Length: 205
Length: 205
Image 1 (tube, rainbow over the protein chains, first blue to last red):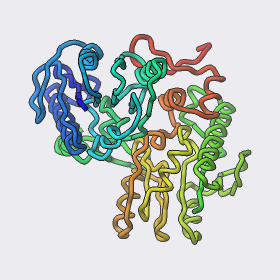
Image 2: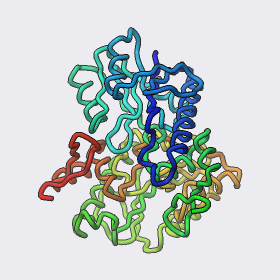
Image 3: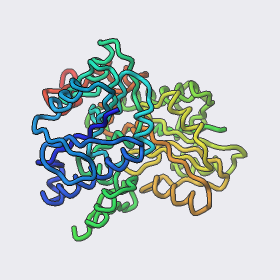
Image 4: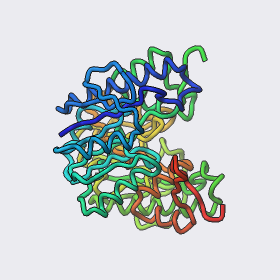
């Protein structure tokens, strides 16, 4: 099985701009990528990072500056084996949860992200193509079913959390076990509960 | 094993007030409760609804108008068997996912909710007590470990989504299989994607 980890090397985590500088957002993105690569290795996979630009990481990098959907579909079209795609910002991914993803049976295996996204998938059907635009989870489910492929959905909180906005950093601090959680703590972030709803706080803010 | 489903019969889903009338919020809450009760039965359990007031549902109801933590701890203190607690607003819960929860080994089994909550748990340690205030997942984890109990965390997206705010309704429409999703569609809600981020829309809005 091939494992692709798509990575945006240009403007990662733009929605965290109110919280983090551009330099910090790049550092955070590289931590998350490193965590995903390590989780993949722990699950016995050999990931290839499919990046829009050069990036320093502990896995082979293929640079493709096209939009995500086109770059992934190009790999799917040329593959002679099953292909898994795991997003680079799944900071809560661990070896065991990726093992569960890879072991799930089905021509198409989907792990939903919050808000209708598809955070991870395995395509064993050679005709399956991705479309990350819009409600991709629903679209992938329908496309797979229409083509007669068997579909399995993996129910995982760790795979559902892609780091996108402020609330996601709180999840990483609470549940993360890798570099990303360490980086956030180092950068002064912590979870506070002033007698009610837990909130993300930063030292000096 | 006893299974408690705590239900707020007084002011359910207050954070959905911008979207739904008080009558609608009560109707939605009862749909979610019905879905959770059915999922529990599908998983082979016999739920008891622990409600702050009278409610019409297909399971025995015990009324206890104290705050959630006190009411649950009273049951834990008096129980002579393991106790599971599954929140009534887990509209994505299904039989198989609750089977996974109940089958998980450990003196204390925890399923995190988003934002630091504890959406479902199994207490096999007779000394375990809950505290739903603040960052309850972290507090429950620490309390169980400090008492020497073995802890298992169940990684489930379906158990992580408790219906609390607007974005959660989108998850129910995308992934729900029960009455709650049907009720929302009936009430005119749908998921739209105007070429980008999926959004929740309502007919007539």
